[in-house]
Image 1 (cartoon, rainbow, N blue to C red):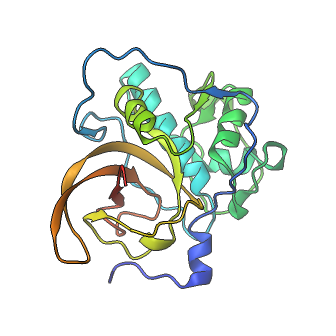
Image 2 (image 1 turned 45 degrees about the horizontal axis):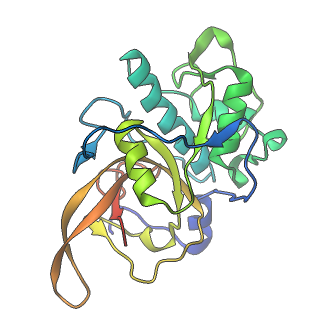
Length: 247
């Protein structure tokens, strides 16, 4: 893709997820939801005003902070009706080794949520702008943009539950293996031999169905997830990725 180039060592900096098997403090399993009637065939939270502009993490493995903030921005909008950009830098600086996060060397979204819950909030992007490196924590409750009271874990690999969460709850933090999509430039991405190893955090903001041309030349309809990435708007579909669902 002509607008986005990265070598292997540079690509590592574009990720930054540090997966772990233990449940972070302050998190609980996703509850059973009572849903009456079928879920919509297509959801796009951008159309409802719940998604801020695409951002760029730069040469810092801070995807986990962007994924966390993307989900929080959506929840703040759904709660208040006001869309406010929140501070990834606040998360990067303050949700540190104490929470199991390591700045530009990687972290985990659930650990970042634990910090926000303990801290009773996160600052706005305007008051605490992104720098692209970890600095000294300078959070101020005078410029707090949002708070969080808890977080929920979805069952690993359960796409039906994930669809329910995206449709009913709103934008959520998710992780996947980003190695195959470095040069993605549009369409529904489908990898037959995808790995279950995860190394990149993004925000799921919708889902749908579209045509996909397979390697054998046939065209099929395929379900997809709509993911907001943090590699700038020049990457992918204006900064977004549509990746195969239920495959």
